[in-house]
Image 1 (cartoon, rainbow, N blue to C red):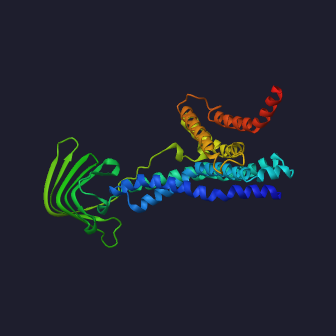
Image 2: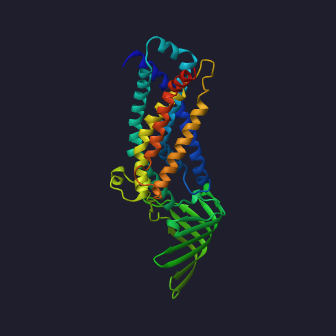
Image 3: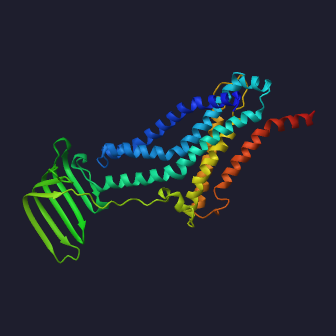
Length: 360
């Protein structure tokens, strides 16, 4: 690789780390705010929130990396135009083709990385995300409860409510527990409850004081009412019911897809690395500017173009999933449009020269 190409690639990589860090921070903060609200209500532990945010960031990298490269090319090439370096390169005999090849190589390497995220890491991260979320919903901890809120566990088969909760002391007052299991309905009310973890026990125990235990059969032919001063129940985790989503399916399974939703998901994973390369090439003509313009003068237009493309691709995916568009062209028409726009902008200066000569 020649010196000019290395210089251009280095200038593109320079802002990439900062842009990627900012995008990850913004996205991670947005996702964390959603899950911290659930943690504040006691539905999720704090450690689980951090794990969920990590998986969501890993999932989003297939979009954050192309965005980072796209903006980096716009900023880097715009700076070369502003500082007159691009004019100097062209005057020294460095052809536009070599400049394009430098951007192409950077885009190709990034596209390979994006393909790893899109085809492998993203579905794996979704699988882990749904599993962690399901385990958190299946388990229960008195210390996470807030007074006056109903909590559902066991996929809704157990409901727990406490009027007042002191998480620091593992203590709750006026607690209500309703459980549906094996055709039976059990309702327990106790004036006080305490949670503790016995030695060599796998699950915590809940001690209930001064309450009643109501048990009813589903047919209504059997009713049992017990009054107790002290009773214990294990807070065993319920059945883990993991969400089954197409986006968590391995790519190899989607290769034989017939369902329109699976086809849409597969095509989305395939076009992501392709769009990474095309966006990098599209950023090159969008970066053209005069030395009088500011360093970030091309950024607003570039952001508008990217937003329009991404929304069109998302709409196309939805149409394919709904069967409104056939598998071919499917989502590929968005890539054809992206390629067409890039080619048009590359040839725009030459077209302007041709039309100006005809007018003369």
